[in-house]
Length: 149
Image (cartoon, rainbow, N blue to C red; front, side):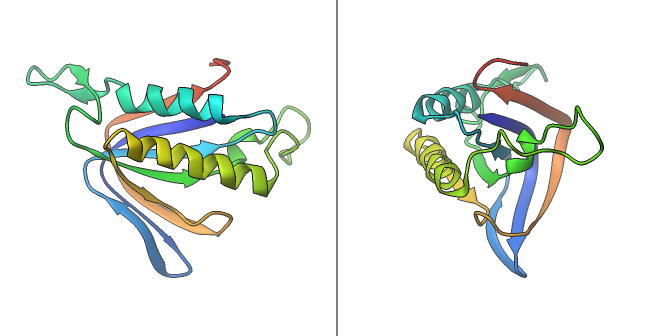
């Protein structure tokens, strides 16, 4: 399971002209699920993301988590995080989970974030979406449950 985590002051996702999720200060999580992922991978990333110390403290040092600042989390499913571009010019998505498996683990991940007391919002699974955000810092972190990076 992979995630691109961005610290935001605001973020919104729309699908079909309808806002499906919107947050203020917090994290945008673009979440990709691989065919080999399980709930264990989602548990790992949920814990890691909820406790990432990437918000500034009173001394302007990144020392606080989204929980510490009372922030929110917007999670958007993004299978393209498993796009393999090593051969040719068109990405291969062979490692991405099939939609049924990905949707289940995506929902599980969102539930784990909410269980940590975080206000959560989501995109619409398998829809063409538009994401607008203000990335603060900018701070962008890449995570992989298999610790590949």
